[in-house]
Length: 139
Image (cartoon, rainbow, N blue to C red; front, side):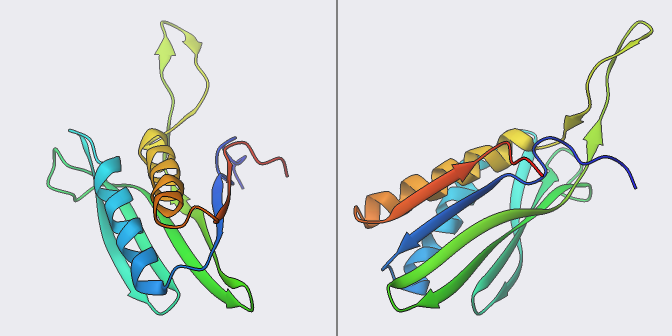
C-alpha cells in the first residue's frame, strides 16, 4: 500500500447545539465557497447524520474526481458532534528536470477552504460552539 499523504488525516471537529438542518446548510455554503475556477464541489450522498462531497475538475464537466470527503454528525446529551474527514484523494508529482518534487494532494486547497469555511460558518451561527481543525495529523 502506498504511503499516506501528510494531509490525508486532516479533519475539522465541531461541538454545537445547532440543529441538523442548519448544520447541513452551513456545510453546503462552505462547499460552494470552497469552489474555484478549476474545482467544483458536489454533494454525492445525503443520509441522516452524513453528507458526502466530492471535489471534481470543472474544466472537463465534473467527470474527473479529485477528492471525496464526508461530514458526519452524532448526537449526544450536550448537542451534536460534527466532524469532517477525507475518504479518497488523488496525488500528483511534478518534476524539475530530473529531480522529483514532493507529492501533492490534488484539491487540498479546496478541502482546506471547506474545513475552515464550515468551522467559521458554525461559529457564526453558534458562538458557544467548540471547534478544532487539524491539518497535519500524526499517525
